[in-house]
Length: 128
Image 1: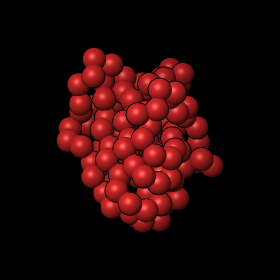
Image 2 (image 1 turned 90 degrees about the vertical axis):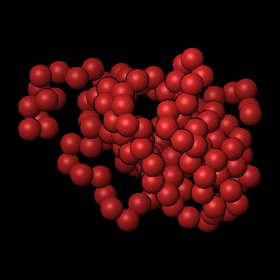
Image 3 (image 1 turned 120 degrees about the vertical axis):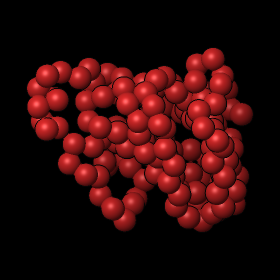
């Protein structure tokens, strides 16, 4: 694994291309990389969906907690193609990717519920 961590990109403009747009009240943060890499940590305040794309070859994905434990099972997919997975709970995570080609992962979550976007009563009212 590369020792440098991949930074995140917020917003739909950086999202993995997907046939279904985000629903109202959803937001996205994305990571784009090549080969074996680990993302910078990010915080979710609830569950999220992962939209994954791989250019070619095999992609293995693990969702890791700060203590190194894994959430769920490893995602394995062959490219080229798209896949979907999830993070079933909130917490601090990194994504550990093993791949031989370019890849992208978009984390789709409820808007206002991730690191740097502290939920407010106004945010909650927008989601109702």
